[in-house]
Amino acid sequence: VWVSDVTIFEYNNRKYYICVVLDLYARKAISHAIALNNSTQLTKRALINAYNERQPKAGIIFHSDQGANYTSKAFQNCTKNLNITQSFSRASNPYDNSVMESFFKTLKLEELYRRIYRSERDLKESVARYINFYNGERIHSMNFYRTPDKHEEEYYNRHHE
Image (cartoon, rainbow, N blue to C red; front, side, top):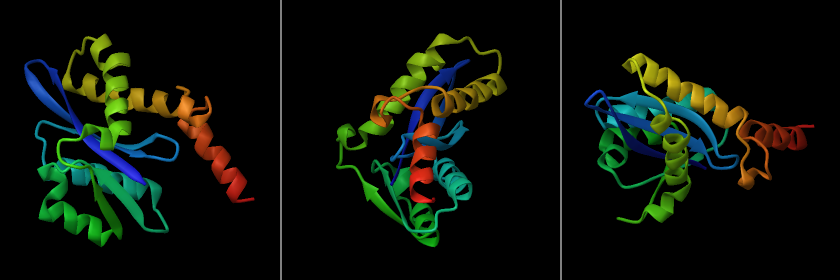
């Protein structure tokens, strides 16, 4: 199961939309995309990047809110072409996608709100660095106090011996 959402971060009087896809098993951020518009193009780019990164052999369930960028015909065609089943949160219920809400809170508190960015490129590089840190160094209680990378590695070692 993959989960996704979009958050907004304002820098230099411009709104940047950050879309992230997490693999729910290890809470691993497997893809992200950043744009000046919250569009279907943004969410499709994040999904396609996640798909290309993971190359899943079986069908994926992809959970998100009911935002227009996830319910659009173009996004639904994309999921169908990738053999992905969509799942949606109930309307106006952020608790149904609480893992994503928690990730964005952590991203903002631990990275975005703590830095002064010099450029758009600096912002984008900072997000990428943070995601690498989040996956490879930051432990999670839901992963039995292991990083997402370590938790996933241990799963694959147990199931592919």
